[in-house]
Image (cartoon, rainbow, N blue to C red; front, side, top):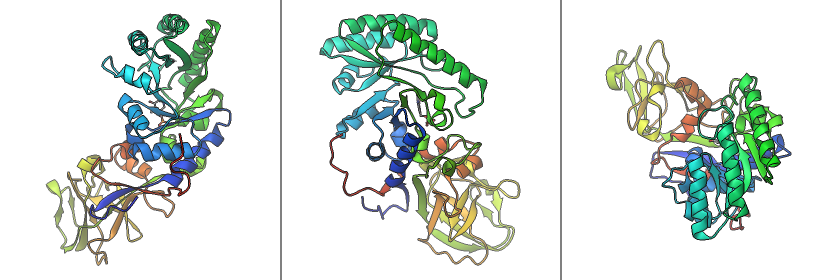
Length: 395
Ligand SMILES: *Cc1c(COP(=O)(O)O)cnc(C)c1O
């Protein structure tokens, strides 16, 4: 893909890193298949390019929350297995079944809706029954799971559905030693045993997100569902960074300075003058703001709170003052040599000592997931690291 030169900022996505990260995840879970989770527009990296790269890296399934994302993957010609799990009674179930998308069933209403849609179109819907093993979010608590399991097996006998999976999700996977992790794994094992005792021939039992894929081999089962790690960010930053798990951050967010100017000491900077220069210095303006997903919480005020880090000319500097809708200011320091058009890196691989999405998460008091997924739609995504040879295959 060509560089979008008319826009003064871009997210450069390294598809080679995505492929390598999926391979690394597969190595962490050698007994399981890998479902690359590409929901939320591939965690902000771009749905279809990321999906193709993940498949090149060895993923055999794709996972999305929204049904629209599953259909977008099919519309792009991707033929691999896809699971979608977050839908309401208004979902286009018939279209999904005809598109051969696997459906999560996380409530009694969902089974009834899927069965009637399958009957209408005369197809068998592949379903994954979701048991709430302790997250307390989507999914069926064990007594309801048992009832819906029986109903699903009846519908299977008439050909409306095929119960191919039982699955669940952790509440504390990012704290591997938390007692709920083991407790949820026990409830999950019981749900799987019940399904099998009642005659389900399960193709995939799956429980592990990125954190559990990297830290808890006991719960890999047949399929792991990593998301954030596919993009090279650590799901357990307090335990280890990406390099500890053989992962490389895939997104580099960069911009061009649109203004560089000298200011005197005592210059208030940006809205409400949250930052004031303590000496004569040079300010640079970066054309990205909260409308682009730059957290306003990453603003910087002196002396007590530096903003999120940015890399300019080999120096790591901090956001000065409030992040605005479309722009923010960086104090480049006295006598800075930068000029308009020079490159600013907000975050990237960190390999050269530059800031990472994790550093931004810390500065904005959030998690790395939110930094990448909130990146605005108007920021162009530019893809690098695409192999010349593997495009055009049938997937
Ligand atoms: C988002 C999601 C994942 C992936 O989680 P990560 O922490 O990004 O690996 C896996 N399973 C479900 C149900 C999800 O919603």
